[in-house]
Image (cartoon, rainbow, N blue to C red; front, top):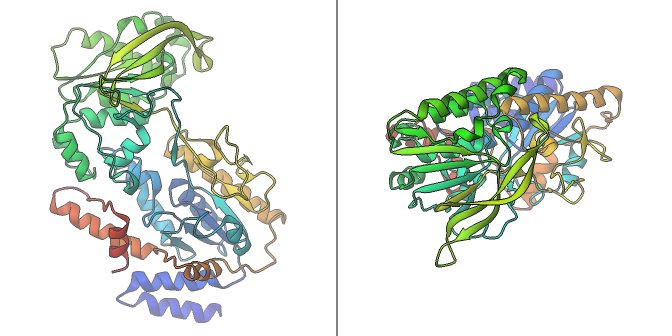
Amino acid sequence: MKGSFTALRCMLQTSKHHGVFSSLARRLSSASGPGPKVCIVGGGPAGFYTAQHLLKARDDMVVDVYERLPVPFGLVRFGVAPDHPEVKNVINTFTQTAQHERCYFYGNVNVGTDVSVEELRKAYHAVVLSYGAEANRSMRVSGEGLAGVFSARDFVGWYNGLPSNKELQPHLNCETVVILGQGNVALDVARILLSPLDLLKKTDIAQHAIDTLAASRVRRVLIVGRRGPLQIACTIKEVREMINLPDTAADMLPADFESISEALKDLPRPRKRLTELMMKTVKTESGQHKANKSWGFRFLRSPLEVLPGPDGKRVAGIRLAVNKLEGSGEDAKAVPTGQTDDLECGMVISSIGYKSLPIDPCVPFDPRSAIVPNNMGRVKDTAGLYCSGWVKRGPTGVIATTMNDSFDTARMLLKDMDSGMLNLSVNKPGGQEITALLKERGVRAVSFPEWEKINLEEVRRGTAVGKPREKILDLKDMLAVAWS
């Protein structure tokens, strides 16, 4: 059997339709053979890093990746800022994994709806949940539902071409935008709002975002955090990018930095460098000429209420609680003082975090922390079920954090295979059985070669307008290209 399959694969790889036929060869490989079969739910960074480690560890391992959208790469495609193309280079590594002869990608398959986790567990020796965090954390304040209030997740999805956010239509006809949260995502949003249009036009930002930003009247962005400068969540790279924005001044409050200089010597080096940069910016900007745009941090503030305008329907401002810190360093807690501070603004963007959602009734889920309860990636009280990425630890860290986290999960899974905790003596049908189930239910998956057709079309459209790609925004259009 192994020899005949090798011969078949060699024959197919000489075909002019190499991509489609080598994909078929991999599917045949996945459907037969006694080796361990693992299913990964989620085609983002956590999913591909987990798959990469598993495939390298065992030469008999077959890994199938299921993704809800027709396109892979998750937050690398839809979350990374369009002016950070170097971060997206990791897609090259993920593509090599997806093209591995023992890996198969099933796009356009919604696990939990099209197929259950229980059905996957029956078909595979192990299932890894890597589906990320697709919901927003609520501010839990009145006025959150007013027009002009958005989550950062939706706003980022809008300018990055996420199909579910293409109809967002933010009206940038106000002068001031308030962003709640001071992490890297908050600074990404601020930078996109204030960046020169000529810079953005050279990126893969969605065209509808370019059109809206071209008519923008936004001149001031305030980035609000509940704690102080020593607890700010962003990294120095993002702050430096804000400082270097053309025709844009930093609007800091010197009083926020008066009492922290003595703490500098005890700070870890990354935190110290970030704090020194902010302090230097306060001094530098105070003597500079007036720029047309500005941005600034506002510390020790928490949202109390989004304030409506005269029509009662659209945001006109936000009321903030003034906080003080109890404790010091990273463990300092923000405590309300009883004072409030009102800021006028025409838009509020909440960047206070994402959260995962339960995927299937058979999967344990902790609603308070919004993660799947686990021990180093092994889901508690559920044999053969694992998790990696944000659904494992919460929506924190950068792509490298997710890489290490996913490798840890893969190591735990491999350890369970070696110890016999996972029973590999039974031959599992893997993707062969799931493909048959999906066909019965009228669900057609998108293969990786079919995604590559979408990719080529997006690059073609982008090249025509001087961009690296123009993303296809409509799911039906994606599928039409994939299956053409």
